[in-house]
Image (cartoon, rainbow, N blue to C red; front, side, top):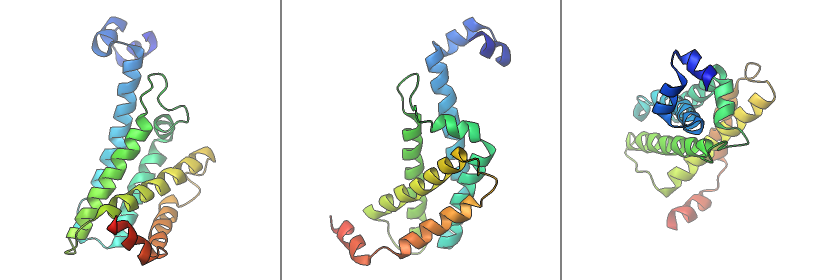
Length: 177
């Protein structure tokens, strides 16, 4: 805590008074990391109602991978395999859930802009889109490939072409449940 206090221009007692413990400070840092990712993604959805499906998907993927490329250490901390250490709070899962909600809401806005309504399947599609981006970014971070591949193009292609391959009967069955 002393090193952190010095870098922050504060004292250890000030940090403990503000956060209570090292664990609470850790939680707050990781929460801020997650919030910065959510903010980057939120900004990408400005005007989604009038964008094409390809452009909306491309913007989402670009915002996500631009953030990861600019913040690889933060991405790693947020989504580390020892999630929740040292407090047990799984910030990575919380961030994925918030991203899924954001993509679901943006998808619903996209559909409303076309006179359609979102259904329960919208959340499932959003969860899959977030999963594609998260898994792709994890692989790229682990394999030092963030700057060597066009990850947003790869993820966009996976998401759009993956949807093209879904049997309409499967969607109908999911809607009926």
